[in-house]
Length: 205
Image 1: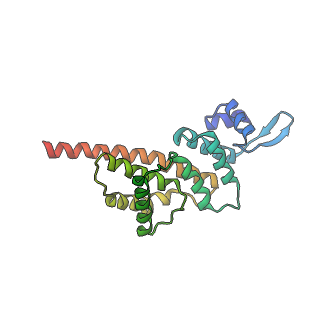
Image 2 (image 1 turned 90 degrees about the horizontal axis):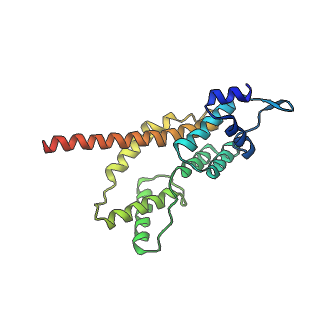
Image 3 (image 1 turned 135 degrees about the vertical axis):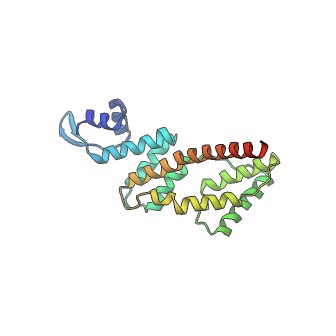
């Protein structure tokens, strides 16, 4: 297909596609003349992945480039490639030079060990959870993660991981991870708030 059809089918403007091509986010099409190239289904998949990262995941372009490089590096195992995308979805958290922080981070590391989860020592989610624990304690919020751990573990192992096409195109796997993590994450949060409203109405009627 020509770039005009690629734009129409992907919903991405031609100038934006050309920008992705220049930046190496989108692989070049097959050159058929000095001014024309042909594109295929792999370009559509890549554009869907970029849109998912950019528009849904709110991932910066610089981080998207790192993810694209991981997708294109066939020597990189699927788990490490997905990890690159996964880490890009979370916020950047700077460790705090306080005893409170060190205690929270130690609690996170202990929790991971007790659960037997395989989490990289430098995974940013460790600091993200530690920061949350610090704020909870500062606000006097009781810290009991057990029901949330159980819910997260069941949701991931019994539902979410089955939606990722591990045997399919690598960019399709990243797209599924991003859409699942972000969109279903938002849906879950909305459902929880609705459940809270309903339970409040029941208890206070």
